[in-house]
Length: 501
Image (tube, rainbow, N blue to C red; front, side):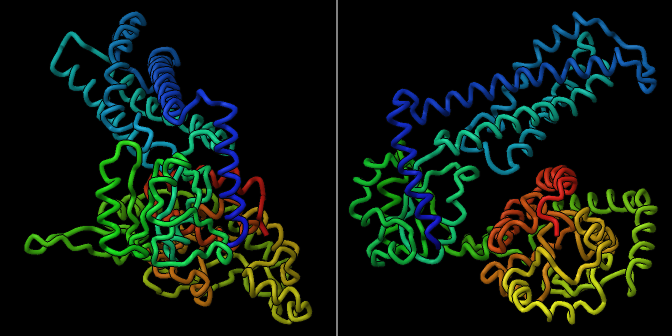
């Protein structure tokens, strides 16, 4: 831990009490109510707009695809929409889409949004099947399905951006404290200190009695001891208590659960105790009525693995065909601008530690090691960060294709060979695994990606530790929606050239 975390915690305390002084009437509960009302209104507007858009496409855009004659009365469809919207909102609520704890973080919300929209459309279809007088054009229903999901997701995405911004100013934050202190507590605190994503205002930790006060060495504030927890909760307005199971005795955990497990004012969260390997995913199986946790060897299994493969091959095969002229032009330019091979093969780590060659267009001179040896400071920088901002080994054309990420296009063939994925953690060399320390085992449970969270979050401008955290976030929170989100964000990230070198 460094002093940045302590400054962050002290700022959280200052912001919390400053805002309470300035806005005494806006309680945390009132903020949640305000957010829910805004979300509810946004959904109504977006669903209504989606239905109007579907009507325009089906009946007014004169698209030749829709040749079937159908009832097109705008008054009829307006009446249907006014009937459908309340049902739609009820279905959203049943999927937990208005429960604040489920929202504003991760892609779970979008996954549930798609499922709820699909169920709502199926109900509309079933209504038309069982009630002959309730007739809707099939094209309108199909377009409504996609447009309702897209526009409600867009509305929630924009509202989420607003909440993220307001969190940096002290709004929509929940006061939290960690009970217990050890390596696991530090790992969790490092993840939670970013209030924009976590939604937590983490004040510090409670000494369980098994440790000494160590805030002078770790810069992680100790607020007191376990027997002072009631006073600390009241003083700081704590709403979430995070128990570090590996730092607490069994009896202490039971006592804390008895005191706060059913409390309406405080929510209790218990860490896994095996935070380092929990990223891979786990399942619970019973043997003779004994529940045992099984650790997955790979992160993606079953339907998730199939969806990943469908997206990889479904986009890669037509993509290679489409950009084949670009591949040819870049290959010829590499060949004629500097002597040496067109393709550079780099030994990298794959799933379960399997080493393979990752393909890239060559961007360096063939005697790159000799060139680099003339710059001792850059040799040290490369060993420390595994990246060089002004690398003397790179050719002029190599610098251009690195800036535009064209050098990575041959990795599409690694995707075809099932060695890489379009989206995934950053590819690393075998010697880099040790840099991931306790997280290294998790990195090898998924295929590395051509692009990923690191690509859309600053690329080479972020620190190595931040890259590790982004990779772990991706593995821990994978869903097909997260892949699609990263894929969409990759385009502006590449066009901006930010952090590309």
